[in-house]
Length: 174
Image (tube, rainbow, N blue to C red; front, side):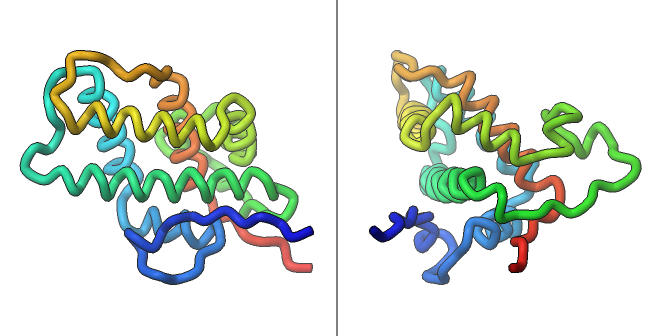
């Protein structure tokens, strides 16, 4: 029986190159800084609960953000499935609290813990629904709020972004 591969759907924002989960996450952070991604995510969340439209002048930026985040979530899902195949670089002796972001000390030492916790609580389909809902509601002047829980997935997604960028992750060579 063949293993089913997850399509990262990165061809719309990163060309037609084949990616592993690590190369896709690297490409994601080369394209945008962590602070910009987290800021855009916060804006999308904020506008999804207001009867205002985010970026009226250029809504294609929101669609581009949506595609990138979807690919990031898929790569994160694959990364947490195969944690035994990856090795973390050793942390620096002194870690700044700013570098930790929203992560606890335990999560900072083991970023895979963040991914496992997130996908234990929410499935990939739940995260897709969350992204679709907040993007849909941020692009229209709706007076109703998203029907799904947006706070918990937002917290998990923010932690995953922080965990993905902490330290280098390398594949264990056999």
